[in-house]
Image (cartoon, rainbow, N blue to C red; front, side, top):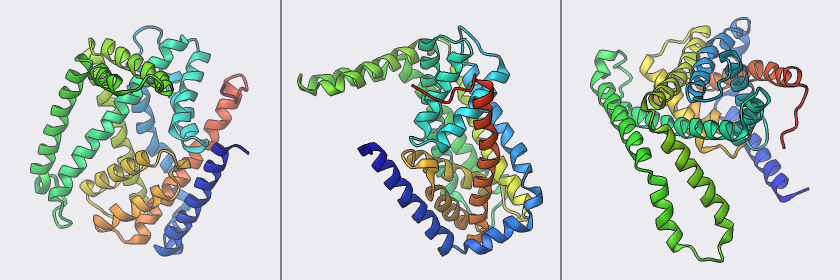
Length: 330
């Protein structure tokens, strides 16, 4: 067994133990009671996830300026790659390799597919930064007794303004090739013997160049970013539907905060398979902050896991049957 495999299994064991502690400490049996009581309606979570899947697919498709896949293939490949990113050992990175592999299977050039996926990954990361800005701004003025837009409009408008400003700054820095400038400074401080950095350096230069080319089509860049943000709101819609299923009322602002905090925590836990334990504690922490009980907050996390399985199993089967029954990624 290699050292990477040992690290993976060790991380998985620790994560599962942590998830079990979260379940036990935060009244998991009561949380499971909400699930069991309303199990007949849980299929609605599949449909609630569709907006997020569709807009994530659109965010990727608009970046295709040369060879374009049909939209339904973008949806299928995004569906499979997101599942792979959640369930395969190396997490989200594996999902991106799967996306490249499957898009090449459907006729895209390997180099073009790689550059588009990397560009989409950068935009997705930046959208997460915007979500962080938005959430932090809302948190500054959040009050459980102030649940309407009118109660929180100052903070919402302020956060939207910051997001727009950050978006234009993002486009400006790409056009100015800031990654290349940083690499030039870094290269001077690297010793010649540090050849292990050479591959990373070259890959970052390629990324900088691809993003630079994309910056000449600001409309495409902003469209992709917009679709990414709407896709994230689709995740909040999923939380909203789940709370409706178990007959729990909460403000829309609270739902947005729950989804944004969980998304951020998942991103930081990219090295943990399926963010096991981290996703659960994130739902509990932010759910408690916006006024939900621990069992209700944990039931949202359990509901999300159930949806991931309901979506994930058909995705893996589709990968096997649609794409020539090839499950190996080299």
